[in-house]
Length: 135
Image (cartoon, rainbow, N blue to C red; front, side):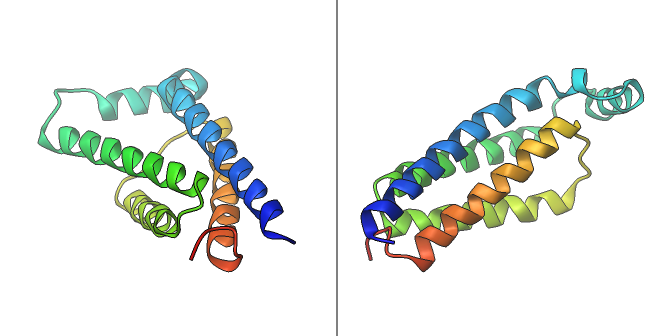
C-alpha cells in the first residue's frame, strides 16, 4: 500500500479513536443509569463520601493522561513519530492503572472500550510498522 493510503487510514483511525473516546466518556458519566440496580447501588456506595487526596490525585492523573492522549492524537494526525511514542506510552500507563482498582461498567461501555482497543492496535501498527509517519 502506498504512503498516501496508509496516511489516510491512519487519519481516519485517529479520528474514529477520538470519537470513541468522547463517546466512552459520555457513557461513563451516565454509567450508573445503565447498570443493573444492585451494581448501581454498590457503585454509589463505593464512590460515596468526601473527596480525599487520592480522589483529587486520581482525577488530575486522568486529566493529564487525557491531555497527553489528545496531544498524541493531534501529532499522529500530522504524521509525527514522537506522537506515536507518546500515544504508546500513555496507553501503557493507562493499561497498568486498570490493575489497581476494580471496575464496574455497563456492557455498552465495555463494547465501546473493546472497539477502542482495536483502533488503538491499528493506530500503533500503522505508526510503527509502516511508513505512514515520518521517521
